[in-house]
Image 1 (cartoon, one colour):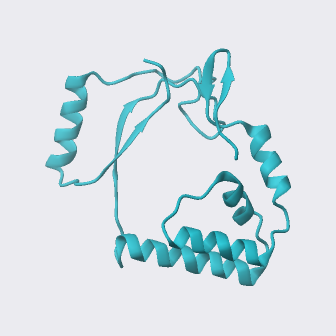
Image 2: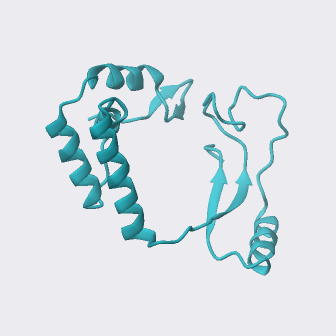
Length: 146
């Protein structure tokens, strides 16, 4: 089992690229039976392990890809029904110790102004979102020890 945390200058980051590439390499050319087992696990609403996710990412067979798409659609409908569910982003803070290439919060991004909301600012943001009719929020923030 892989644990996606590692120590970097006594700070934790949760995306160790070398381990991810190793998993992707290890799970190349996945066996059909194994893929179907993973899909069954997912359809039973059980969390997938990183190795299982890597296995699904390595599927190239068109029929197996259709199985993945079908399973994803089925699981989505079981959870949310035949509707689109939107979440309003609630940005709490962008201080972060991680350096994820895709993320604007990454620690190496020196051009961004760093801000973490105070409790009062957070309360005002939530009230503003609720006043606009939002009922579901997705909390967005960086990982930082503060």
